[in-house]
Image (cartoon, rainbow, N blue to C red):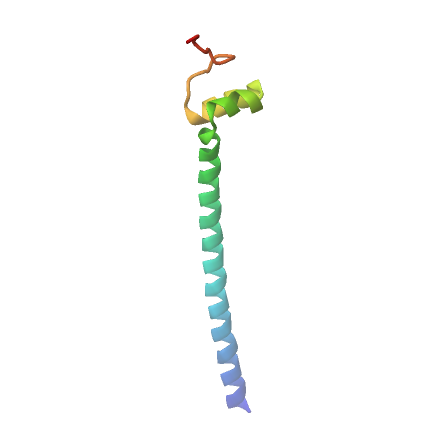
Length: 83
């Protein structure tokens, strides 16, 4: 009986260690995913077209995109040269 209890205990402990490794792996993968998502979130606003910038963003959003993307302040409206 004592032998069976020791064997069961070893199996349970081995299972706990495997589960702990699995949890640590899952946490590391989730952190890696979140880091990638954060990097993508910072880059996406800089991929906006000039037309969409002026059509769909209000002035405070435009300033935020300019600050984030390192652009110079843009004019209030695009200047179109008559051709």
